Length: 136
Image 1: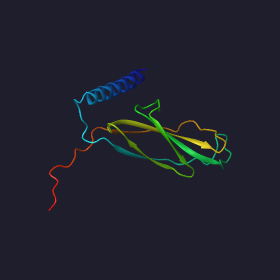
Image 2: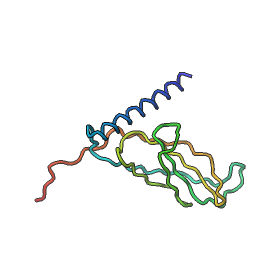
Image 3: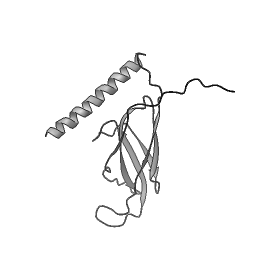
Image 4: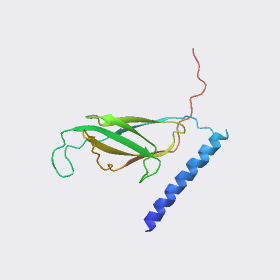
């Protein structure tokens, strides 16, 4: 029970910080030094169905993401045609913060798997821009 409360408080804290930074940026009181971060997600495609029979018609994988561990994964999605097993996602806007990804397998009949285990990446700060650039 305490771990659930702790996890909830962490998610609330992250949302509050993200909201405050977004508000400050909208008011012109905060500027990120860089605005994009690229995440590369990779996975192993399934070869069987949940009943153990061979999966012979995998059509695609859907990568979904959200800002907090445990979901919801409503921040966006990208479909990768089979047999692909990697996706590159560029975070737009403020590129820092946490982003958690799950992968859903989809067969040629449109049947979808449950989401995979999640993988999360937290970027606490992006690099500042180079300065004193000159041409000699």
